[in-house]
Amino acid sequence: LYFSVQEGIVFCHRIRGLQYEMTVCVDISQPISSLIFSPDYTTLLIVTKQGTTYTYRPAHSGEAVKLLDACSSCVLSADFLTPGNKYCVSVAISGEVQVWLLEDGTCLSKLSLDIEENI
Image (cartoon, rainbow, N blue to C red; front, side, top):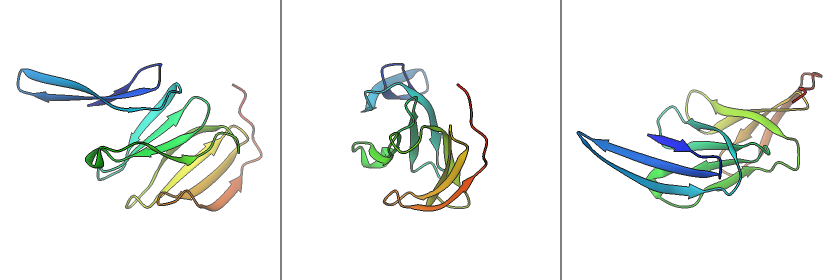
């Protein structure tokens, strides 16, 4: 079970029978708005309230890698583009939908919906 708290920390809660262990997986240091696992559960997308998006691979126990920076356009949400986990799709406050290559954060495609979200 993975969950986050307001301070931007992602925790892993391992449950085995009546025993459980909680560990800190990664500290983003920004409030987190959503956590999304890839279809094969190997990669976790972490989206902050500022719109920055990170990838985290629990099996590698490393740091989260910044995929999208909030300075370009505030991301409202992101998800994996299936099948597979090579791509993700994001939607920004500006109404722009983008497809990203997860490997290095390359933007592959953009579509402007010409609708701006008011938060």
